[in-house]
Image (cartoon, rainbow, N blue to C red; front, top):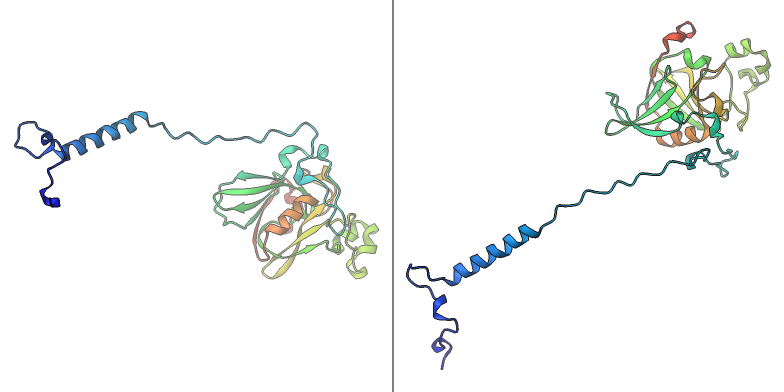
Length: 253
């Protein structure tokens, strides 16, 4: 017997018949599929929300890892004495709505904060100390260049106010790099219209000066912070310095 002569193996009830309620092979398939789908819909579970794991706060007095000692620097940087720094001035990423483009440095002199603008209306925020020279200039400029472990040459005006600095004057070649150098581990040099403003962002070992107005210098940062900032900023980056109205008598521009 040939294949075409084989009897239909399915019951006759599943053959296509005239209208009258008899099931067809197609209707069985559609019905079974619908039952399957309805079963899935009935047993589906909602997608669970992601679990947010919060970093536990540091024990009181514990040093955040970002402020550990840096022994591999040319002049090993000691651990920050965080008891001398209000936690609100610790380095942290924050929301920061601004029209300035990412990469811009904003120095909020009155609030004693420095912001490095990031994408997405965010910024890395640092606490700063502001010295006399830091209050003397404000406006828009650029980071002309950066230096690791720079020499310090106090301006002649500063030497005139503090004659003990004469050995480190410009004519005497300044002070060599090191932990006692007032510019600390890194310095950013600010120029406007191709000219040096004498405005600097630099490191400092004096943790207690962060968040305060201090007697001399420009914009002080913890050495660990200025090392981090130095590595994030490119030469030519824009900088905006917001003046402090209470120090208007010190301004020169």
